[in-house]
Length: 142
Image 1: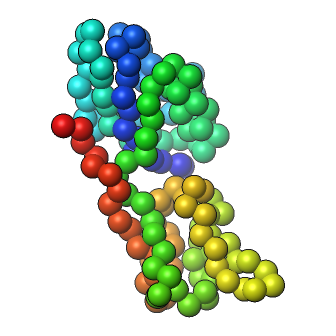
Image 2 (image 1 turned 90 degrees about the vertical axis):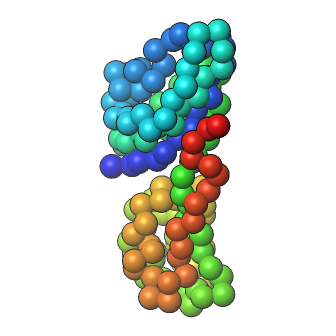
């Protein structure tokens, strides 16, 4: 199960459309509304936790973007503390998305932030605690 928290901004022209419902109906995604503010004739916003298969998630996000919705990741991200990392590779064994991999023949661990789903498995698997969860941008809109 792939899960992310997203911040959505709806343009005035799209506020009245059931775009988020289509995530469930057409893409098989589950969503939990964490915060929202949508008013007629004004820009709207919504913070959602979206879960489902990675393929469905990508298709659903692409659908929202095609409708003019600004989609951003929110909440948390994984960062690697380069000073602590010993390149032991323990994190690569548990990473379900391939965001962590061993570069050969150098035998150094590489981290691709774009592939990371923030599942946090690498955080507990890392002996020197080089993988850290950090807050990203503000979760709720003002």
